Image (cartoon, each protein chain N blue to C red):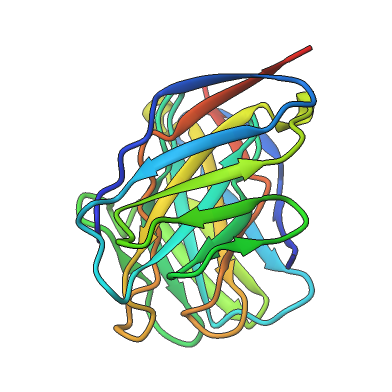
Length: 113
Length: 116
């Protein structure tokens, strides 16, 4: 699986947009970008995933650059409950038989009042 | 999203005892489930892949005789930590892909194991 690079920590003011970057310069053409987050002492929570196009759901938006070497997760209006470690994961080709997720260190997002 | 549960949420046991952790997919069937372990201030590490109707697949360095996995049905996988020792104390988390093995993985809330 392609390796990802994320900043170790970020701060965001409550109510503002949180933009979490992820670099995945060695991503292959058929690899998806997944985002999960883990609130302290809980299991990871699925946020969003995408291949090429930008994606949006009720939790967040995912912006993938045209060359797919990086992406940004956007939480449009961060709340205190969004404080968590955010993991950007590149997942191997879904048709290859591989479906495991490899977690890096992620970004610790701290949302402050 | 899909719901995955784990039981118990936390367990404290004496060294030498065996501990069983259950992972259930509540609103979908899962022929494959995954077990992870997370030590304090570290990321999740995949331990094994649980397959319904066949043997589990273990990651390198994970003792299959120590961490016994049984995928009894399409909604239940169990992880038994045999003869637990203090170094087995950790946060154990399961996940299940919705749909087939290629589906988005949903995680359980985790089980905190403390071995005294």
